Length: 413
Image (cartoon, rainbow, N blue to C red):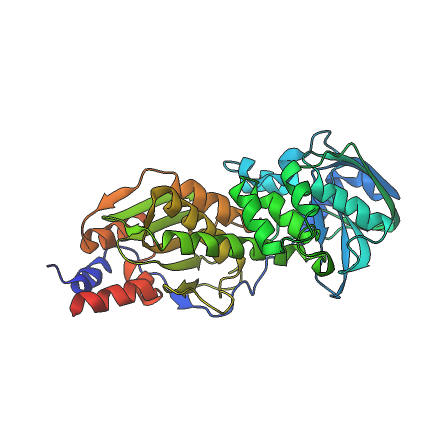
């Protein structure tokens, strides 16, 4: 049996030496979006001098978190597209350059109306927001607003980008059409929100639609329904569904050999490793200098989060990406009717200049797992493959990985 520690030491000479630092605080340095604001002012000046906006809303709403429990609620509207459905469907964005995605999403104007989270069925704006969340297709939307649009594009690790914001004076939604599955559970006051989420997912309702429904307070016991900030609803739905999938796959047999899935998208390199073992899961992200969350450093920043067979209790250090990826991993293992030890290695290179939201992780982990895997029978081959496909030396991944560290310890025993 080959000594894996000696192998890793020998592989350290194969890749260029780069400075890598372990980072505990994730997403600290966000790139200044002032250049995006300037671009928006030049391209979309026609709406910035008006006090109203009309257009297509891609069934998209946004619930803020600041001031909780009194938060800003409202629709997203595109004044430029008759059919805005693509703007709310990240599964259609795969293959687009990052500049195109941002340009496309900056078309969306966010309407803002302050509401108490418990007032899901009180008020005209609240009613219109609910209709949008129920709708199965883009709806016509009109907003009269107070003051001038605020041009401060939102760029975030968890949220998809959007353009200017306006304070709603009044609004109207027309030509909406309810999704039957969502409307049925909206009318069910006896099912709790968690049950509704899992039932909708089981019925093949798109996860992005489920997240919007949760955010709009469509589900749950009547007395418990409330608006949920968009950021929270994304992670909440991913966590609920992926936990359910995790418990399901833990009843399956282990995979027979090591499987490695590789993909490149938006200058992110993805390497996902399935190893023959009981369920455990780890996701590691490495951000190169001058990328979205590592602007002001000359070193690569690495972040990681891990869970064992029983899961984890604390919120993952790397944020919502952890849960979005876990959902796709769970779905893949469910399809395979297997369980495994799963390691996600993500290198974020210089081309990933601005954040586009957690969908990037969800869709590209899914895309990676749809590729044909390389199947190996030995861990020495696995380490060689990792070192070959990724720029960061395998020894650095080992230092930052509980799964790989534990593997080396077990092989020494």
